[in-house]
Image 1 (tube, rainbow over the protein chains, first blue to last red):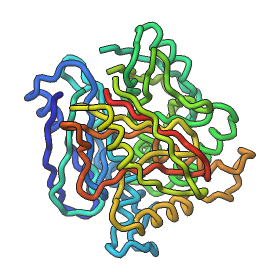
Image 2 (image 1 turned 45 degrees about the vertical axis):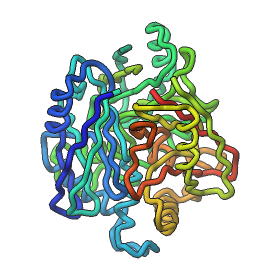
Image 3 (image 1 turned 45 degrees about the horizontal axis):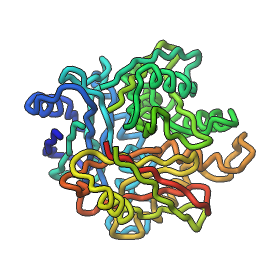
Length: 131
Length: 131
Length: 131
């Protein structure tokens, strides 16, 4: 099994961080050939998604709308003030899979892989496994 | 590794398209035995989900409520007018996994696999990998 | 391929049930070593997620906010009165993957695996496959 841990540094409370190049580099170093790469976030107020890598407005629209769907200051019981981040993490998801063919990610033309920070800034990890 | 690409033609802007039979056919042609099938959508305004295959009202309720949660005409920055589709794609997700046992999808009795179009009509692809 | 079925008994209409220990036990009995475990929910009004295992308020905040985002009594067409459950199932998702290293789940310190009941109480299944 091929495995790597990618460290991600977030700089804001809510942020989408393009990790596509780092995932590609980890695949290349591991000589992965054909299979499926699993990306797994070992945190409870962060997530992983695949979305457009061209216009940065897509990412700000996404973060803005998620904040409207799950407002930070809603009357939550959890005392740490980050229930919005926990809920967004479940809506977006802790894992995603991408096919790997001939060592390359089978991403569509406009797709990038985004680490989703919902309670930063922090140092985070992203686990990568090719099975 | 077993791999197939399924072409999906959508006919409306927002549509759930049952691809269960096409996934089954691809599995059969590939002689897949035991494992997990990964279905991956290489687009940024489409997604994949598993839900009820009996009453079509479930699908219209789903599309209607998603449109209410993420309205098309909200004040988004992205100029292409499809930010709602990008956000729905992230909420629903670009990949799903289903166990395969003896060449058969381990779906529950009421489950079907749905390609989710959020910015059609278009010709789309769905990538299938058994690992 | 390693495979197990975990039976989950829900006691309320909407409930998050911690299944981490049962997933760990199934992995141990199967002597799984390295790979990725896929957890798959064969139902259409239930889902699977990974989130905080410490403060139970996170789980009640999650269920409460999901019920606000997708109210049970919205004007849905599906006559069974559980369209909210179907929609939540698609938003949260039917499958999740967790890396397995040396037979152990590579979960983060605060992560637990939660079966999400959205139309209980019922007896449910959770399929586990290590590929």
